[in-house]
Amino acid sequence: GENSSSCTADCGIPDSCSDSDGGISPNTQGTISGYDNGQPYSITDVCSDSRFLNEKYCQSGVNPASTTYDCVVFNNQTNQSTGSCQEGRCA
Image (tube, rainbow, N blue to C red; front, side, top):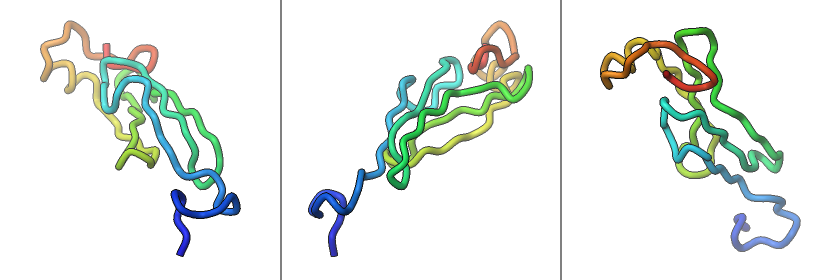
Protein backbone atom coordinates (compact mmCIF):
# COMPACT_ATOMS: atom_id res chain seq x y z
CA GLY A 1 0.00 0.00 0.00
CA GLU A 2 0.97 3.46 -0.91
CA ASN A 3 0.54 6.41 1.39
CA SER A 4 0.88 10.15 0.88
CA SER A 5 4.55 10.20 1.83
CA SER A 6 5.69 7.18 -0.18
CA CYS A 7 3.50 7.09 -3.27
CA THR A 8 4.07 8.39 -6.74
CA ALA A 9 2.35 11.46 -8.13
CA ASP A 10 -0.92 9.55 -8.69
CA CYS A 11 -1.78 9.78 -4.98
CA GLY A 12 -2.61 13.46 -5.24
CA ILE A 13 -2.17 16.19 -2.69
CA PRO A 14 -2.09 14.95 0.93
CA ASP A 15 -4.60 16.33 3.43
CA SER A 16 -3.31 19.32 5.38
CA CYS A 17 -4.54 22.02 7.73
CA SER A 18 -3.08 25.19 9.19
CA ASP A 19 -4.75 27.68 11.52
CA SER A 20 -3.79 31.36 11.52
CA ASP A 21 -4.82 31.84 15.18
CA GLY A 22 -2.88 28.80 16.38
CA GLY A 23 -5.80 26.49 17.19
CA ILE A 24 -8.84 26.98 19.37
CA SER A 25 -8.65 30.65 20.24
CA PRO A 26 -12.13 32.18 20.73
CA ASN A 27 -10.79 35.70 21.38
CA THR A 28 -8.98 35.85 18.00
CA GLN A 29 -10.54 35.52 14.56
CA GLY A 30 -8.58 33.00 12.53
CA THR A 31 -8.70 31.13 9.26
CA ILE A 32 -7.98 27.46 8.64
CA SER A 33 -6.67 26.48 5.22
CA GLY A 34 -5.19 23.50 3.46
CA TYR A 35 -6.33 20.50 1.44
CA ASP A 36 -9.12 18.02 2.23
CA ASN A 37 -9.47 15.02 -0.10
CA GLY A 38 -7.36 16.85 -2.68
CA GLN A 39 -9.51 20.00 -2.62
CA PRO A 40 -8.18 23.33 -1.33
CA TYR A 41 -10.15 25.15 1.37
CA SER A 42 -9.98 28.33 3.41
CA ILE A 43 -12.56 28.87 6.17
CA THR A 44 -12.66 31.79 8.61
CA ASP A 45 -14.10 31.84 12.15
CA VAL A 46 -17.55 33.41 12.01
CA CYS A 47 -20.33 34.56 14.34
CA SER A 48 -23.58 32.70 13.78
CA ASP A 49 -25.33 35.56 15.61
CA SER A 50 -24.39 38.17 18.21
CA ARG A 51 -23.80 35.49 20.85
CA PHE A 52 -22.39 32.34 19.21
CA LEU A 53 -19.00 31.82 17.55
CA ASN A 54 -18.28 29.01 15.08
CA GLU A 55 -14.57 28.46 15.83
CA LYS A 56 -12.55 26.58 13.17
CA TYR A 57 -9.46 24.57 14.07
CA CYS A 58 -7.27 21.71 12.82
CA GLN A 59 -8.02 18.32 14.35
CA SER A 60 -5.09 15.87 14.50
CA GLY A 61 -3.05 18.40 12.53
CA VAL A 62 -4.65 17.65 9.15
CA ASN A 63 -8.45 17.64 9.47
CA PRO A 64 -10.62 20.77 9.38
CA ALA A 65 -13.00 20.89 12.34
CA SER A 66 -15.17 23.37 14.20
CA THR A 67 -16.77 23.94 17.57
CA THR A 68 -19.34 26.44 18.79
CA TYR A 69 -18.70 28.84 21.66
CA ASP A 70 -21.34 30.74 23.59
CA CYS A 71 -19.44 34.01 23.96
CA VAL A 72 -21.52 35.12 26.97
CA VAL A 73 -20.54 32.00 28.94
CA PHE A 74 -16.95 32.01 27.62
CA ASN A 75 -16.35 35.65 28.50
CA ASN A 76 -17.85 35.26 31.98
CA GLN A 77 -15.38 32.40 32.60
CA THR A 78 -12.41 34.50 31.44
CA ASN A 79 -13.56 37.78 33.05
CA GLN A 80 -13.77 39.61 29.73
CA SER A 81 -15.73 42.86 29.67
CA THR A 82 -18.46 41.85 27.22
CA GLY A 83 -20.19 38.69 26.16
CA SER A 84 -20.85 38.94 22.47
CA CYS A 85 -19.57 37.60 19.18
CA GLN A 86 -18.10 40.29 16.96
CA GLU A 87 -16.15 39.94 13.71
CA GLY A 88 -15.54 36.21 14.15
CA ARG A 89 -14.37 36.29 17.76
CA CYS A 90 -15.70 36.46 21.31
CA ALA A 91 -15.33 40.08 22.39
